Every structure is written in structure tokens, then in C-alpha cells.
Image: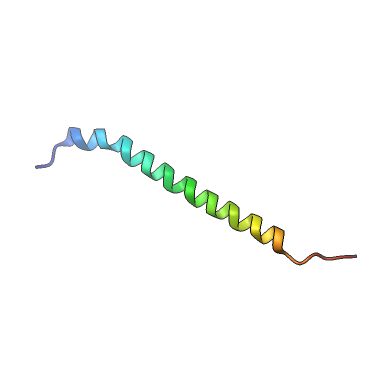
Length: 45
């Protein structure tokens, strides 16, 4: 049976989960950017 009050109380947990997903994606993007910068060929002039 659908209980609207339970849905509202679970929104907090859903928000924490989504925040965790965004943090992990941000870390992966940051690590990829850092690795690309560190391993890029250097231009010596």
C-alpha cells in the first residue's frame, strides 16, 4: 500500500544518495582532468 508520509520521509535518504552520486562523479572528473594535465606532452620552446 502506498503511504505518502513514508515517501516524504524517504526523500531525505534519496537526497543523500543523489548527493553521493554527484560527489563521486565530481571526483572522477577531477581525477581524469588531473591525470590528463600531468601526462600531457610538454611543449619546450
